[in-house]
Every structure is written in structure tokens, then in C-alpha cells.
Length: 125
Ligand code: FES
Image (cartoon, rainbow, N blue to C red):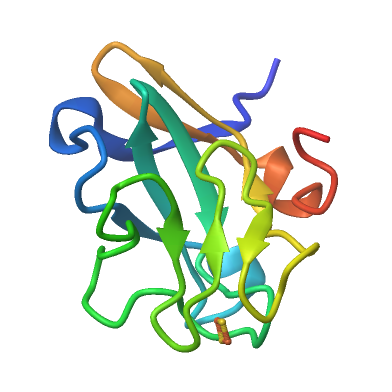
């Protein structure tokens, strides 16, 4: 069976509710990235595009959490997203959500389910 995962980061490099790690998503275009964060010791990944305007969420690379470390934040107009689901709970995109990607951890690595790139509008819902 073909392996439909690829390593995007080392588990040890991703700490709880701190900087997210960016990774390339060449399937979606030359300059499109994804990011992965750790929240309540689970890993969650999304396409790095706000649901309001499709621009990157982080002004400072990897800065995705709000001050309280409870939500993912878009630096442009302040949209707040639930880390577990990507749902926008506050801001101009309320009711929309980030494009979710499936990730898992194995042998010290964080793996991206490559198939979830194409299914990103349906993952986890
Ligand atoms: S571009 Fe993200 S909230 Fe407006």
C-alpha cells in the first residue's frame, strides 16, 4: 500500500500552546503553507489562510495563539479560531472555519496525511 503521509516536523520541536511550525503545501501553490500547533497535547494542522481573506494568519512567523493561549488568531483583523476544529468563534469570519489537515504523531515525527490536502474542506466534520 502506498504511504500517503509525509513528515512535516519533529514532535519534540512542537511545544504546547507556543509557536506553531510552518510547512510547505506545494499541492496548493508555490507560496501556500500549512501550520501545525500543539493544544492539550494533540497536534492540529491547517492551511495557513484566514477564512476571512485568504492571507496568512501569522504576522510574526509561527505566532498563532492569542494572549490567553486558548485560540488561534489571525493577525490582520483579529479572527479567533478554535484550535481543535478551526471554527471561527469571533471576528469577521464568524461561522466559517480554517481548512483542516489531518496530522498524527509517530516515532517522534509529525506526519501529514497527504490525502487530507484535497479533502481539507471536509476533514473532521
Ligand atoms: S484577514 Fe483574517 S480576520 Fe481578516
